[in-house]
Amino acid sequence: MSELTNVRNMSFQLKQLKECIFSKETLDVEEKILEKLAERFYGCYNRISGSAQTIDNYFFYLETVNKIQDEQYKERFGTLLLKYFLAIDPSAAAMIILSIVLFTRAIKFFGTEDHAKYYKAVARGEIIGTLCLTEVGHGSDVKLLQTTATYLIDKNEFVLNTPSFEAGKCWSENIGVLATHAIVYAQLYMQGGKYCGLVPFVVPIRNSRTLLPYPGVATCSLGEKLGFNQGDHGLLVFQNYRIPKESLLNKFADVTREGGFVIQDHSRLSTALFEVLIDWKNRRSLHKLNVTSIHTYHRFKDRIVPCSKFAKCVEIHLISSSAKCLFTNLVRDGTSYCLEACGTLAYLAISGVPSLKYISESACTAEGTKEILVQQVSNILIKTWRMALEKREIMFPMNSINFLNHATEILNSTFKSQSSAVHLDLESTLGHYKWLVCYLLKSSYEKLHKCFNEEGKELFWAMHDNQIYFAKELTYAYIEHYVIQKVSFYISKMPHSSVKSILDKLLSLYALWSLHNYVTFFYQGGYAAGSEFGQFLEDAILSLCQDLASDAALLTNAIALPDFVFSSVLGQNTQDVYKLLENITPNWTDADDANKKLNSKL
Image (cartoon, rainbow, N blue to C red; front, side, top):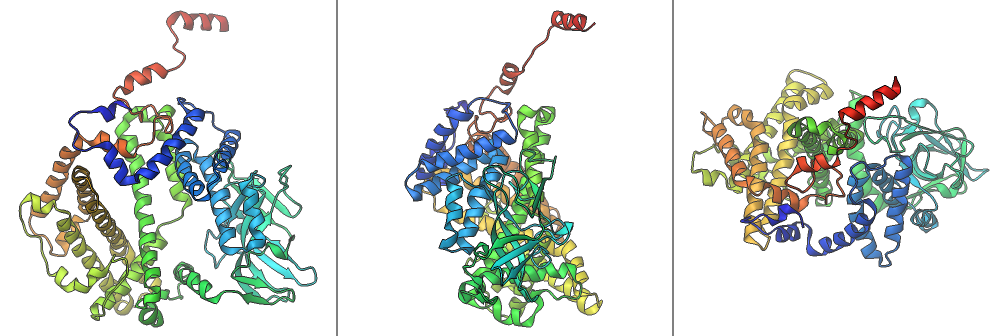
């Protein structure tokens, strides 16, 4: 047990907090995982890095998981082990995610029993897989992807082609050197030129023994990058590369021997296509100015969103898209704060901070721009605001935006000066957020209406202007309110009062710190007047920081990785960082040694 866990007079029990966050069963599994990892990685600050070590770690993960017989326990063990690999070797973790997780899941979801041999071979370590959607010039915009697959009736084969450099499949982990098989998304054409849509194939791209690409397949590594330099990112192109008909992942759609295109399961496919439809229409509107967003179609407004069958799909899309934007920003900003807080020591490789900085920025960039997601979320929310104006009941199953049923009452409310204890209550903070979301929705709706109807701007530019000053903040305020609401409910169900108390304070600090970013809107919309509201936020944040200061180290310790997992001098769970730094500083040289080295060179 570390020194920090022995601090006296702590306001909560660390073990109770961990069990509330992770559950006792999860902690028991993690204890067994840490025993395995300690045997391999314990105690080194300058680990050997490189592609060979990454491959070795990949197969260590596979071997460790395969020793478990219970399939249900194996899946849980593998997921938790992967969490630690993200800290120990992010490049190996990315390799695991692409090959063992995404490649396998894609085949299980889109394929049939005939394709089971591929993910079984991955589990045995016989092949390495990857997922290829992104193209050099088109990103992940499924409508613009140009890689083609043409079905030849007489040969009963597909021919894959990359028509231009812009159509090359890029950025996928394992493509540069290692992957033997890939899930490739291509535009399907029949031999006569009939277009059938985007479909996935499982494609062998290299010999599994020599790792040399097959004729018709060309690959290359993408070279040095800002981060993930041990990652095997590459570029993949096809030149009249023939694959058998069985390569098509055909659970939902198939090609007949005679060249017909058949959809196998209409009900499941239609549900999946709903999300694709929303995403495609909004992405397409960014490339063609005359295309109207799906969220402005009257049929969509009046039938799809209110329909209970799709309400949960819409709300999940709202939450997941906005949460991705929020958490990406938190990771990006958090690593920058760490760098600034640690000062010059943070620039040492053994501090661990530079690798965190580069890896987080690379990962956030690789996930793609947030602007399209922000626009999708704000479009749906603005549509929901119109429902509120028309007095139509808003009933989303996860209750993320249902308070719009009382929008008029909320907007008529104002900040009332009361005791600090009242304002520190989470319900009070959630009330501030509800007003903020309603105000930003009202402002976004009115601005969009003005730009489009009164000023005559094209819809694309009207949405663009609206997003810059209102819709962007609306997306973040919406998801922050939902996160605070859900976490508050989760805390209220915890069995230990001391744990509930400390987490309530921590959540209040996050809520008020986030709310402080929107102070201008509270004054602009008339919710607050004078200096009291702004002063309250600042005083409350400082007060909570002081209350939590003595417990900060223990709170961090509850979720922190073990010292040997996160290889960082500054991140060690010790109260004497400088002593630790002194002990591991290598190759001291005194004056005599320096003179001897100089004379020998002369």
